[in-house]
Length: 223
Length: 145
Image (cartoon, rainbow over all chains, first blue to last red; front, side, top):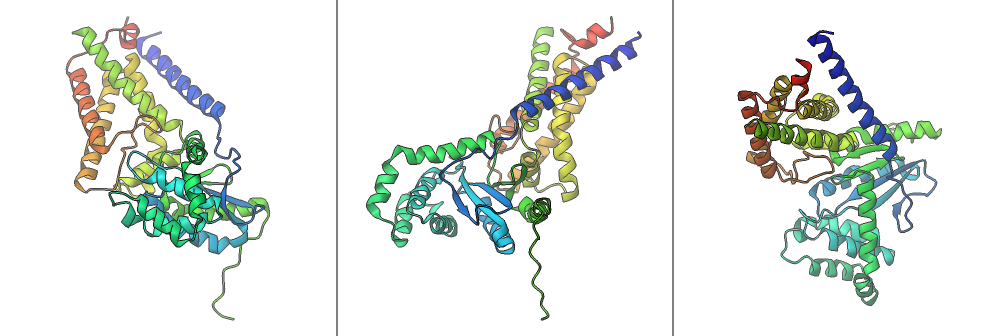
C-alpha cells in the first residue's frame, strides 16, 4: 500500500475509534437526571404528563431572567405541567448562593418554599451585592412569619446543607454545568432562559402529544 | 529540542482532546448555552457550531497527540485558538456576563481571562510546532517509512 493509502486507513481507523469510544461511554453513563428524591419542591399535580425540573441558583442573574418564562409556561399549561425546583448553587462566583439555598430549604420545611423562592429572586439585585446577605434572608423569613426557632434549628442542622448538596450532586450527575438548566420529561434539556423561551413550549406540546393529552386551547378574543 | 517539541505536541493535542471530550460527555445544550452566552453567532449557527466544534476538537486534538497529519491538524487547532482568543477578548471588552469560559464542559472551570491566557500560550505552542517540525513518536514518521 502506498503512503496515501496508509494515511486513509489510519485516519479512518482513528476517527472510528474516537466515535466508538464517545458513543459507548455516553451510552454506559446514561442520563441520571431523574434519580428520585423525597424532599421535592414542586408546583403542579403529581400525575401531570409533563415534568419540568429546574436546576437553579438563587444568586444567578440568568435564573432570575428565567422566572418569567417559567411562570408563563405554568400559566399556559396549568395542570398539565409539574414544575420541580432543585438547588444548584454555584459557590465560586456566587458567594451567598449556598446559604440562600439553605434558608430556602428551611422555608420548605415550614411549607413556604415558593414564597421564599419568589422573595429571594425579587430582591436578588439587592442582597446579592451586599457585604452580608444573611440579615436580608432573616428579614424575608420574618416577613413570611416563619417560626424562628424552627428556622434556626433547621439552619444549624447539617442535614439541611446535605440536602442542598445532594441536589447539587444530582445536577452534576445529570451533567448540569450552568444555571438555570431545565429537564423536560427525563431527557429533553434546555440551558438558560433563551433556550427555554425559544424551545420550551414546543417541547412541552410534543410531550403532551406523546402522552395523548390535549394541549390547552388558546383563549379566543371573540366570544 | 526534538523531545521538547514532542512535549509541546502532547500538551496542545491533550488540551484539545480533554476539551472536546468534556463537551461531548455533556448534553449538547450545555455547550449551546455557552456559545449563546458569547452573543456573537446568529441563532441559525449556534446549533451546528455546538454539535460540530467538540468533535473537531477531539478528532484534531487526537491527530496532533499521535502525530497524524501533524502540520495540517496543528494549523486547524491554531485557527481554533485564534477564534477563541478573539471571542474571549471581545467578551472581556464588552463586559459580557460570562463567569466561566465553558471551554472544558464539566471539567476544569476557567474564567474568561484565564482561558485567554491559556489559549494564547497554546497558540504560541502551535506556532512553534508549525515553525519547527516535530515527528518524534509520531504516526507521520511511521507512515512515511
